[in-house]
Image (cartoon, rainbow, N blue to C red):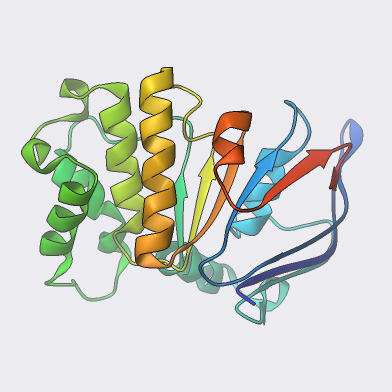
Length: 219
């Protein structure tokens, strides 16, 4: 099992609020799942825990059998960089960097440079339909194109898990449908496990598994 959550709770003390209650969740290698729910239901909080960006108040999170609570921050950072790719509602591209440079950014954390990374980045950009945009800046791209760059960036280190937080939320309908289809195709082609948090019931219906986060619990 790639990812396993057992009895996970997340609460905050000021003001006191329990966001996640007794979450149980499993995700196998290559599996794809959508998590839906209203605003404020804790979807982003759950995604942060899945991505080792936050720790639960209680419960256990295993990534490939490793208990994340037992890992140091450098070990968690290595997992986030090498094993998990992130796509957010806003693309968070660096405006001063080219499209190719933005995709290569996650590779800079490696102790030694990967000589194959530029070619891999170019191949990913071709796969997402942006082979003609390598030297453009984000300001020269449409919103849909920027999100495609963000997807390529998330995959540059060949992660086992891709986490997408409202990836189509800032796009028009046509671009949202196109990006959703791209994520589904990449899940199948590359075997990367996929978790999509979304308000879009249309996107969620296209994934093989759908869960709803309601009142802090998964259903």
